[in-house]
Length: 223
Image (tube, rainbow, N blue to C red; front, side):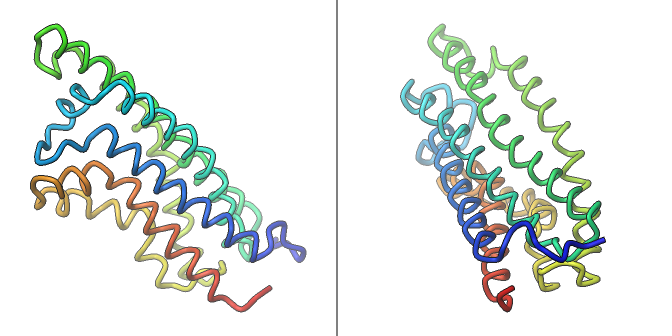
């Protein structure tokens, strides 16, 4: 069953996509506040020597980005309005769950940063006191794989069968496809580029997705 009267009009969907783009830029800035330290690519060490102000600002970025990202999930609802209701709702809620997780996981990194900072101040290795914080953060990430998998498994067939407002080429810009290239891309980088691309990859991933999604939906004939 599809809705004859769409809940979200096309113009609203474009603005929701822009919200997602802004969210990716805000949280990318948060990544750099944690990780960027010139040529140094040891992210735990970089967080350990970051100023208190940088760590606090990065945590605030997580909150702001979570708001913007979650609004951006509304664009996904619009994109799949031609689909059956269960498909549309499953994609919206799974994608919204992913967006919320982005903010929660990044916010939880404050615990890793402060643990590393405390270790260095005590004259210990930066990663000597971060095990619990890292384990807790990884647990959050593992839970997020469930909505990520649901979104991917349902969205790709819906796009391919033209049960959405998306053109088929958008599949190549889906988060799962870009995620698959993380290791080969980041492993080939060094110095500052490794910090920038490697440290901010997951938010650059969403920057690419929301930008391509917004362009695709803006080019669609108006409702």
